[in-house]
Image (cartoon, rainbow, N blue to C red; front, side, top):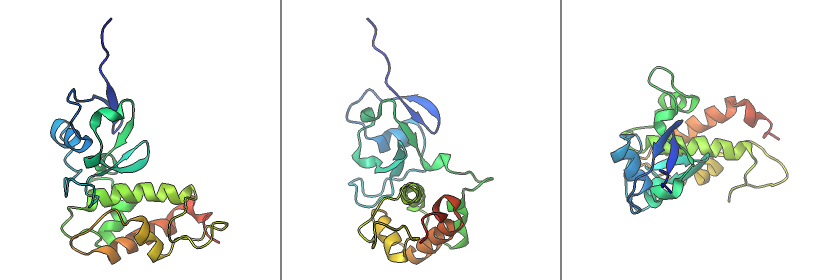
Length: 178
């Protein structure tokens, strides 16, 4: 009986998982797969620079072991738009200068993409005032929803403006309005 190689689907492509059970998802993505858009900030799950999407949900890749993601679909910043075809979030970040040094931007955009899906699905946050209605989120609610992603440059107001733009133009969120 032969052993099968464990794989994860990374940006739409099956990739064999590392044999070392201690390898973090972050290090596997960056060092083994050369997906360096995912950043290593604190390496302790405190800054969000390493945020990626696993099965559509945001996680800190520095806190997760790669081998735990057998058969999972993993999305990194490299799969969200391109230099020639920016996603709506990337365009909004550029328009509103939501990236200063840019180090946190990949994690911010991955987190924002997942947050938009959470909004579309009606997920509540600590700032949600009324669980029976789904108005567009306030700037305070957006800050709370993005609180796991730090920006050492302090571009928070610009990031919130970018998010508000995308939310206002996203048809899937228009039903969320009161």
